[in-house]
Amino acid sequence: MTTLYDALGGEQGIRRIVDAFYRRVAEDPILKPIFPDDLTETARRQFLFFSQFFGGPALYSAEFGSPMLRARHLKFPISPRRAERWLKLMGEAFDEAGIDPLTKELAFARLTKTAMHMVNIPDEEENNSDAPRGRINVQRAEL
Image 1 (cartoon, one colour):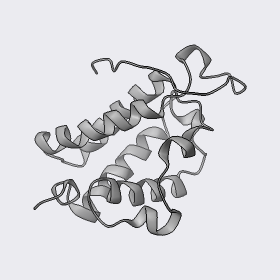
Image 2 (spheres, rainbow, N blue to C red):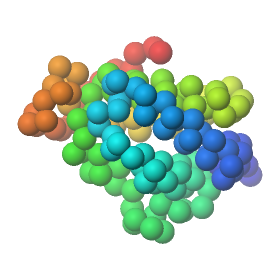
Image 3 (cartoon, rainbow, N blue to C red):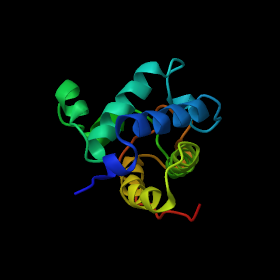
């Protein structure tokens, strides 16, 4: 049985995706404000998580325990607009990494649900660091 991890190219494929994604984040006016200036550790953690998330080795859990994504991201103001932007840039990264369309579609079925689950603030509050964060019900727009 082939996993998404294998279909994405294993370790090297995941690295290509993550590298392409964070090059985009570093230049993006919508996402850059919620990321650290140095993206090295963030990219490393994303690689560990994606390896596990897509059916490869459980690298993230081995180092950090259960992913608990929502809890770990609650401190960041993630609006529907930012979740959509994350998906857009990730889609571009998949394309740059040469991921075939069917594999990308399968991966995005999972990534979209996860990205929308991270939303914790309305768009109009994304620049208000004091705004309360919680579950926001969002419908995904077509990209």
